[in-house]
Amino acid sequence: MPSDPNITQAVASLRTARLEARGTRSDQPNVRRFPSQRALAGVIADLSAALYPRRIGQFDGPDEAEDGFVADRLARALAALETEIAHELDYWQGENAAPFDPDQSRTIVTHFAATLADIRRLIDSDVDAAFLGDPAARSVDEILICYPGAIASLHHRIAHELYNLGAAIVARVISELANERTGIDIHPGATIGGSFFIDHGTGVVIGETAIVGERVRLYQHVTLGARSPLGAARLSVRERYARHPIVEDDVVIYAGTTILGRVTIGCGSTIGGNVWLLSDVPPGSVVVQPEARQLESAAGLAMRETLEKAAS
Image (cartoon, rainbow, N blue to C red; front, side, top):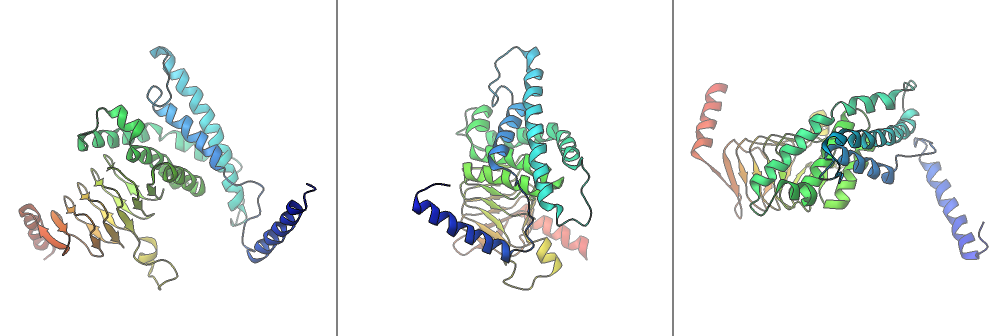
């Protein structure tokens, strides 16, 4: 114990505050370890190197040695990931009616490893979409290494698989690592299709139950959020578990737009900058400020007529 009286007093007051908090949180799991942000940052670094050995992993050996490099990085990443998932399961054990399987963390990691090729393909599609969508890009390598949207996408593709496999806290830590680095906040529960491009990116927020289709482009400060926070109003089951927007294929959403609640943005629509939306938008629409007028293209009108006829 330090002899400095200031430290002694601070330690005592912190102990009091700590015990007070524990006394008021009787439902808080009592565990020795919690998933580590530092350890998971190392996991992401090694997984990124395994996914892209030359571009991110900086492997410069012969082609025949590349698989060995990937295997080494992957072995280290998956071993550390299993440890962190085990810490999460220990955390939740007190909330579970029955003990977790002793091999639960290993099972999750085994299933996760089987998704890595698909994760790589999705990230490739996102990088390709950025290259097609941004004339300032000089190469796909530049996008993968430098663009905040691509960095956030890489983290999200990994975090989403872990979230779906039951490692929700580990997944959330990974998403927050991307948030710290890029200013892009994507909940790992959000479902996002391929060829996803976030241009510039700072301030983008995508909520847990958002569903984003294929070939969607977002600009900076776009929010796909919930309309009412829990506790502020009584919510139906649908409002509680389907709180965020559905953005269909081939939608472009420009900077500063906020879309709240379980609304649907129809395929092929364009949402202008600084628009506030609380209602559905038909396919093929253009929504603009300052009046937030909704303008439908000829294709959008034809599609609406077809849908109305089909529903009648």
